[in-house]
Length: 196
Image (cartoon, helix red, strand yellow):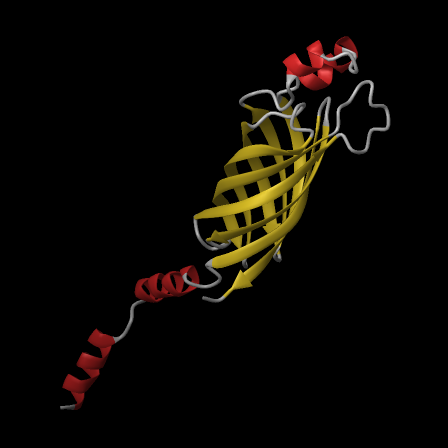
């Protein structure tokens, strides 16, 4: 009888592979929902500063994450010479997805992509509605998320025709700013974990 009980206990015991699988399953359900608050800046001919907020699904333990959010983009507000730069304000709604390439102790290195829909807030005659896409890489360390990205506008962010036809702007001086489509940038966000 003792031998039978010992054999049945051994058959019911978890193997090391089973323990690893259960641990991964439990960890995969931890910190799945999050909110982010951050700031990003991008530069080329134009300088963009954008505070942002988002909500998302996934964590540093999961392979894929997705976020939905909104940004307030301020373009060229730090330049004092309006003859070469136009200042515009935009609200951008975005969706982003990332793949965690390597993770350790609730930290990770990731790659990802994002799509923004930008709408002008002020200066609607100068600014255009447009989409922009980006690819990025970064690291998430102790809820602080630092990334670098390359962004491309699918249409010009500024109304080139209006500036060209207007008497108050010097089209040739503004040409570099008007025709910019690609820029690089840095993003810093802080993750707030939500238990739902």
